[in-house]
Length: 179
Image 1 (cartoon, rainbow, N blue to C red):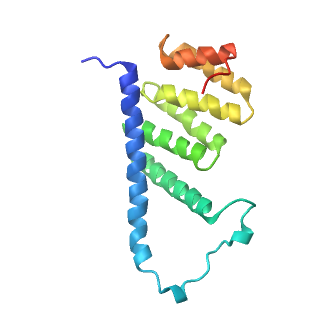
Image 2: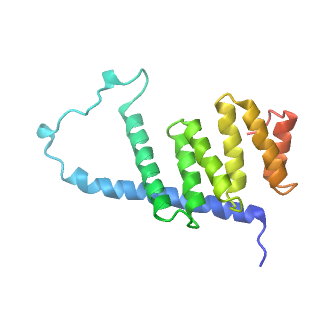
Image 3: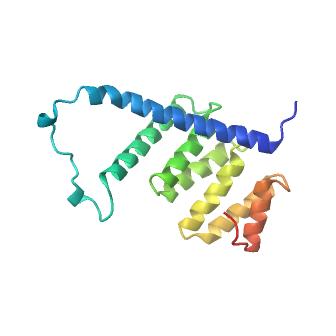
């Protein structure tokens, strides 16, 4: 049975979402025993960072979210190290890039993982998404020339007429009405 690229892309996205859900559940499960073993409230010490020490507008919850993202990144990196040529490596790399982008706001680190994914797994069904995210990272980093290079690479390597190919073509034409 021949599967079209959009179905393969959807399956790949589903795998990434599933891996993220499993990662979040693992973090929560790992923290539950520690929460149950906490001393009574009277014996609990103040958190290491107080609200006064945080930058203006930043909350303790944000720090917690960043820590969770870093923990998930570390777990994904361990999985990659365990089996560097495994079939799930592209999904782990894309998940790491997504965490850097969405939770840590670190487009430079994300771009490194995306470039590595494209280089290491050029036949992965996640490559078109990686290309699009990589170009957006370069745009956010103030490097539109590199973003343009990525759009050109997309047009050279992706199937003509695919959604990602059309997106790259529109971006190269200067269409600003795109996501």
